[in-house]
Image 1: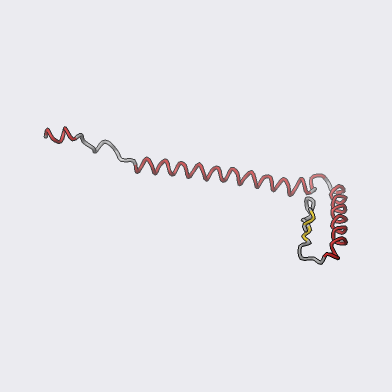
Image 2: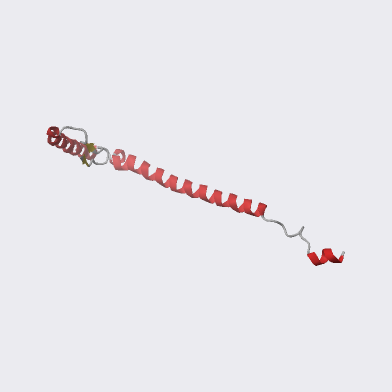
Length: 102
């Protein structure tokens, strides 16, 4: 059994915990979440979880997306250059009629 957490409070995993302790642990988990909310409300806005950790996670996600896009574009450009390099040139191929007349 997993009890959902909240922002800076992780989920509570009761998978390997005896059932007789579940009720007490769940109540404590909910108290911890309420204490966390009060603590966050008393902090300056710029120091709150949603304005620090969540903003950083959003930036990191954006950087990963743009980084992956840059890698894909570089790979496509590399393939294009490689295809152009490997493409046979027609300048060295002569017509068979020209060869027969010489």
